[in-house]
Length: 443
Ligand code: SF4
Image (cartoon, rainbow, N blue to C red):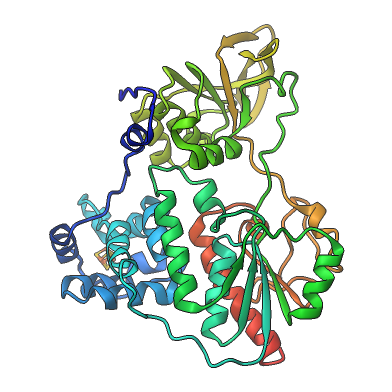
């Protein structure tokens, strides 16, 4: 079990949060790329939501054409560098690599991808050609991966694009919600800045679009509007004691950590409520911030957690422990958290039932709850004919990403309910093509 001292300064923070997928050097990339079999109808490509031509870019790396490799990647995925670092490659491209069938370690596709794109990001070489101006203007609400990807594709098609972002930094959850040992703030910001320079769209920061008047103004100025609004805050626990000091939502905790790094502290004993990937990230981060004990409490069994097994492993490696079949009833404490009252659960034929009399209090001084994120339906209320389903996801045409209001398109977490960065990137690009068909081809 790894033990971490509480980081007192930025250097110690960076040591505790050292990248789990560090960048390759030239020699490593050369040898790793030499292992590729350049499969026909490669399963790794089929497993990539953005369909990157993986064997081609690996061959380009191996033959020394690193710029060509980056171009191949960016052709399909505008977040080529970030996705190489934050994608769950174990269940996507690397999980599909043919080497898995021979019990041989699959190609490190993600690290090769970040190697090639990282080399190009470090230069000012122009690798994109923007389309000839077509006279149309599109407004993008939200500078997350879906919004930026849509903006990039629209610029390639000749549109004038303005992105409106409520926060003071771009990239949505990539910078606010991904664990810092996967990608650093600097790396995320560098790729977005590079894309802005390469493709010439403009991001207006601290510019929230919230009112009907603002939307009306956008409708008067732009020919189409893309909603890349993502998700909201962590859903409430709806339990007594939720408002006690040191009881925080996982998304808010991770955002604070990314923004304030070593200045964020946790208690000595932290209980994480939830069994998804965000819960695993929060557990791992609490341990790396120096918590002495981290417990992941989940109401069902280990194999029923929605987190990827490798994410649970990442949390376990740094000392987090699982506590299963326990349902929280109350956050216990006076002014601040002193524990969590649980009841033990039993699963019979898939149905969970509390075991009478099994209540107990697990002492702790911090609770982080990862109970999913709120949907932003209150904002959608303001837009005529934009509808959402029972789970609060914006309803769109599955091919064009057009909403019920023909001038509005949407993609990313607000549509898929919360998926990976790579899914948002893929959808944002498809939505741009949907906008193009609607405006330019009149479909
Ligand atoms: Fe190369 Fe593996 Fe993809 Fe085949 S499946 S092309 S070996 S990365």
